Length: 107
Image (cartoon, rainbow, N blue to C red; front, side):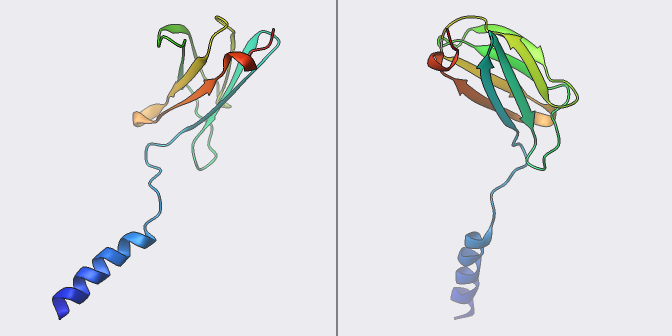
């Protein structure tokens, strides 16, 4: 009987476990005036300073790169009219991406 209570307790404990944010980083991007504006931050709100930015086209080829400033921001010229994936590589394995559609790049 005790064995079943322990197993039940173990299984129920998974219901109360929150998501892990150990390697999470947030990235957001938008295009305006021929440039891509990128912002990145950690879940606690701290800016990603010195994060490596890569922009990949729809064929997964790198078309631009940059580095975030102390506010977690980076501004780059639009490298080409295509669906673009903005990838942030921050410290200690933190990585994420954001898809900026061709239709969002403007004329």
